[in-house]
Length: 505
Ligand code: MLC
Ligand code: AMP
Image (cartoon, rainbow, N blue to C red; front, side):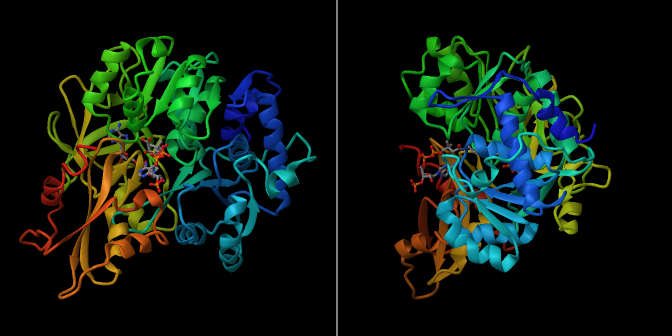
């Protein structure tokens, strides 16, 4: 094949009149219509002088046009780099600079703030708004609805997704065509997706879950999606009768269960509910089954690896576990200090290998070498155990990471910002249980001698460098941080002290 990713996901549907996207206003976009728009956008991209392998950084609201832009990048051989809409200009500057993006696509509302950045970094800039308007689609209008797909190899890069790290510096995970394709093909089989499926799509499309899992699985199966701008409980309940399946983060499920309209009848026609990106409490799993008679299928993945494990479609979906390694994924539990493989039943670091595992971090060979072994195993940083039946459970994290509503926050990044604030000697950022987001961010501050930090001013100051979802929901001033004999902050003690802070919400 000339371009395996484009040909398999999109080209295979050429001329197909079947629905691909159902929008909330009743519009239906067919595969043929979507591909025509994709081709027009591909003409615009190449017309801008972009060449195969160039990165296209995209921070736009979820829309059919945004998805077509992703497809157009595949067709034109470009590397798609989606960015969370919550990122601030400061955060974006780093991503654009680090990736060497040749083009930045943003909402018109952010154009003024981003133009000096793109100018300085030598990137072109175009706009695409939530309603599909903008300079990009303006240029696309009237362009040919056919485009000669640019040839790419299975091993060529298809996407960059930035993930933060324990040092606070984000890393661009390089994903190849094979990484994306092999995983989506496996998931279609495992989860029995077909052309009859209508997926309720309420996830963002700037992360693996909404983009590479939900969308690519639908594309390979040839099904359709109810394409919602985001998770709105009322809309989800209104649209559910038209759907066959849904994918979500645990917050989706706790919000549904908190609403009396979500009844057994409301879910009775649904074939499959899938959860991932953050731990689904066993309690949520049990409550869901009690309410609907159905068991949520939980799976486990990462930006760097796509999906690694899944509970079975047929067979027991075991609460509190993430199921079995997917076909083609080798998974082992290792000793965090020695890397030696541990026996079944022992807790250790989860390592995975397979076609799903990324190629490395963009221009960060040392970081790549730290996490990706020479034999191809990726050290996930998640702590897990395999039970006697082969089910994998995630029992903790070896990495200092908070997952809030499915978004990752690395405490170091927040601590670096807090430490710079007036009156602050040092800080420790922890995740504490939260009824809606699963976990939320709390900052523990130590004041400089004789100074009283201005908490409101600090809350205001974090808005520049940090996206809203990374902001501490509470800041607490203490006399000193607990440390072990090595001088390391004992975050486990802090987490224990503040664990009930949001319990009564
Ligand atoms: C929004 N806010 C969040 C937040 N989402 N704060 C913390 N964590 C989050 N996840 C902010 C809003 O800006 C708002 O700020 C306030 O919190 C309340 O917002 P809300 O209206 O309650 O939130 P909502 O817009 O409904 O969004 C919540 C959500 C959303 C859970 C629906 O965050 C979401 O779609 N999450 C999915 C993330 C995802 O796709 N992850 C997959 C990663 S891939 P203010 O200023 O109003 O207070 C991956 C691999 C894998 O992990 O395995 O899949
Ligand atoms: P990300 O970097 O956003 O891709 O997040 C990946 C991380 O999310 C993993 O390393 C896990 O810590 C976590 N994760 C994903 N799925 C699950 C799950 N089902 N249960 C627990 N944690 C999960």
